[in-house]
Amino acid sequence: MNLSKPIAALVALAAAGPAVAGSIAGTVTVGGQPVGDGYVVIYRANGTYLGLAAINNAGAYSYGGLAPGNYFARTEDTGLFDELWNNLPCAQGACSITGGTPIVVGDGTTQANFALEAGGVIAGNVTATATGQPIGDGYVTIYNSSGSYLGLASINNAGQFAYAGLASGNYFARTADTGFFDELWNDLPCAQQVCSVTSGTAIAVTAGATTTVNFSLQRGGSIGGSVTRSGGGQVVTDGYVQIHAATGAYLGLASIDNSGNYLYSGLAPGNYFARTGSTNLADELWNDIPCAQGNCTVTSGTPIAVTTTTATANFVLNGGGSINGVVTAQATGQPVADGQVYLYNSAGNFLDLVSIGANGAYALTGLAPGNYFVRTDDTGLLDELWNDLPCAQGVCTITGGTPILVGSGAQVANFALAPAAQISGTVTATATGLPVTDGYVEVYRSGGQYLGLAAIGNNGSYRYPGLGAGSYFLRTSHTGLLDELWNDLPCAQGACNVTGGTPVVLGATSSATANFGLAADSNLIFRNGFEL
Image (cartoon, rainbow, N blue to C red):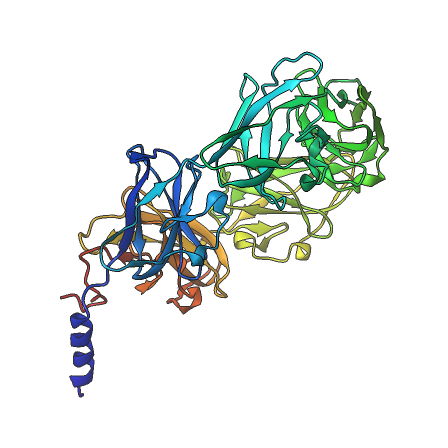
């Protein structure tokens, strides 16, 4: 055999130098002083989001595990005038990422420092018109001159808010979730966000200065009432009442308190719809229309007319039907105390889920009459679609299961789960041989579809159970080193074709080991028996 060509190739690779994990690091300052808040966001050369690094109290940041190449970076949520490196305005991310200066990463650390300006501020007070007292709840949301959402500032107990880091220009602002009749500045009704943002009064902001914007809010109308159980009037103390506009658009919800009452405030005059949710009974659309698991057309309910007072809408709920059972391990008959049971309607649409208890029991309650499907998930065994159909990681056709007909009583659907296959292994740093204790191993199906992930433990090990027979692909992520696609293919920050990896093939109940050795600054490229 002529080995001259392979050996020559290896010599060429050795001469090319080490494969390393680079990093971007630096400082973030304002007026020469460290900025101790916010993030530096990293982007790939094509402008797609990669990840972020927190800015510490000393104003420093570091983002590692980068393959050689070009990257972009910008600051975010610093409370100052954020920038795209190098010195390009990017307040609230309003900039073209690829218009920035590329940061060239190679072996080791590339410095990229930021020196930020103060930016403009919108600040003010929110008070109740009737009393002049501060409103200590809710938010003020900020929009740019075209009406695009930028962010929000919480209203504190003194009724004050402040939103910083704005570029010079015009903005719009409105209150939200105050419990009062929310407004678009200046003094335009905007209850539950039902308004055109750009119809408000523009707020002129100058970088480095504060523009004062105050809100005085009316109380507005409300919908409130009681939620009780039929056949005795026992109060319901769990769940919520969801409010919808006349068009059916979702507005918000009010929790049901320990007395069985709810109240949703800050509504403009008009018609609304309401329904209960998550009460563990047969939820309803007001007035007295079945709506279990939200399976109803909101606008088919009875409209609730709201003025400037409280409109009463009481609910009396039936017990409804239920599906319950136990989940056991087929091999031992012992209860499975981990995972969930998922509920689907007759069309296969997801409705709800419940956790499996310590005794292996589960219960799906408050069901309207009809056909349902159920399956287990995340049990660590071979999950099933009832009755006895494999459904590992939810990979099955829901309507191919056995339907469960629910009436007004309880239906039993037990699961006995077979052992499943699993993939496990270790993740180490090849430069030191020490375990990697941060990040994840992500698992993909044979077609490259994302399946789930396993955290890497303190000893560098991971385990992903509950897999069916078939082929899978794996890669590490967020380890701070040069992440890989198994087996030994660079995949820094997921920049790789998953199906280009080496598949891990599993039988029905087999286990496979897939170890990773990740490159760091001093790691040579030679692996798979060719280490020097």
